[in-house]
Length: 447
Image 1 (cartoon, rainbow, N blue to C red):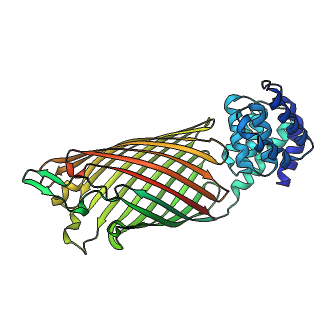
Image 2 (cartoon, helix red, strand yellow):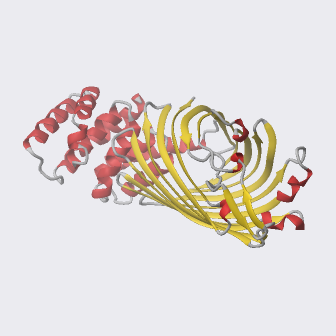
Image 3 (cartoon, rainbow, N blue to C red):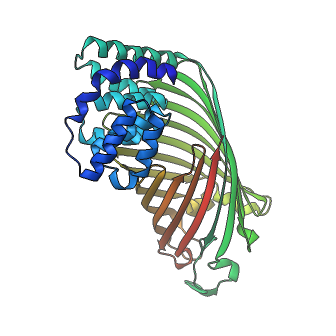
């Protein structure tokens, strides 16, 4: 951080401090008092004190450009680059051509190790042919960015998480007691009907990245999660997955190929396993836009130790998906679409293979530093490729799901999340129609 300040703060900030302020609107008297005090503290180099003062007035003044600028500056100089990024991004959205804002936002990106975003903004400033002192210092940052990008350092992180909640339908089953079929009415047992229960999820995982150079890297990740229902063990789940792959990065684009394996245990007994090959393309464009495409081939196999007929459910699946994201001020919008097609391994199990597609939309809001409410909505449609036994019709399902939640970044390493999800599955076969409400709150700690 000392080198960071030496290169930029003492040479660039001093030169540009007055440029930005004159372009911002006038505030009310109370706001003027706070801003005057923050200006004085920053001029005296008392950045922690300025940050504390900003925090005290954040709820009332957040969103005022002059306050946001001083808040961002005090956060950046006191070692809180992530908070500085949020503040400067709000101003950059309103004043996209303001050079001083670009410079400070680029500094914040650099300090938070978002090197591609910092490099882009620094180059945008250089393209305006600034004065020699500005150019010299910006070039110093670009050299540091290049050095970091060239460095070959592996990274390893791991996490633990836990969620507790309640689910009105742990087995995704109908609430009907009697089902009409072509051969007559059928009484469903209690285990075949909707079951509500409380649950506890516990899990852990890791992410490992080994860069060969600034453009190529290998990666591996693994995850284990245990879902334990308090009263009904028959639907307890253990999920273990691992993935390894290779990635190539060029400018703001990332291409990767990987292999993934997964095992699912139901009530502590092996239930399903799958193996996947994946390829993905991701791009972070300018003005907050991001795009992604993914293709996956997955072989899904069911354990036959409990029943030899389980292999009738075995399928090979092809999945294509794409997403488009946009960061706009405090908001992050994202929309995804996908299409999948399955082929049964055995002709007698063709009714278990599906064609499916769907769309989802999510919205995140940076309500206050460290607090992110979010909303998600999705529609999914599936059509089975052969008539279901007994019912003699091709099963068709339409699934609607919506979630509302809140992420609280309690500290750099700890996230606390609370959400509620409603799911409604409409099927042309009554046996598969159901609704479900799931509440949960949990904690994730990353090392």
